[in-house]
Amino acid sequence: MQSNRLFSETNSCQFLAFQLGAETYGVPLLEVQEIRTYSKATPIPNTPPHVLGVINLRGAIIAVIDLRTRLGLPPIEDSDQTIFVVVTVRGKTYGLRADSVSDVIDVENSAIQEPPRLTEERSQRFLSGLAQVDDRVVVLLNLEEVIDNETAERLAA
Image 1: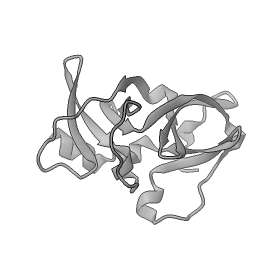
Image 2: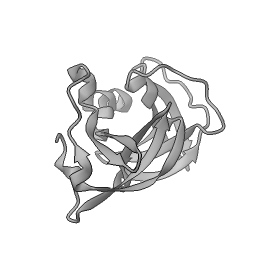
Image 3: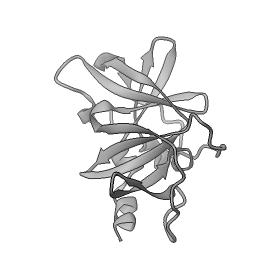
């Protein structure tokens, strides 16, 4: 497993589950500040392709990462279901654009498995694990890799 910080002192962890296409992804609930309805981000020149731009979040300007682009998924049009998941990574706040929010899920630590090595190493680092929850597989994201140091430094500049 790439990140032991997923595991709490208890036998389970909570994740916010959201959709990207037909797939369910999850991020640790402790890293989520809020979920917001989507509003168009203001583009910023010379940012990586996965950075949509910035939004004003109650007076704070935060960068918005398009999870579809970051994870190599095809783009889709925004809908009334499109959301921002506002997260804190390494002490900074970011918005993650997702297709729709699903729910909060409890995942037993024993249900989290290491993802198989099916993707290129560059993409594999975005994954913390896979979890079987009811009848679906949830892809657990490693937010410190999704918003890596290089992206954070470029946005800070």
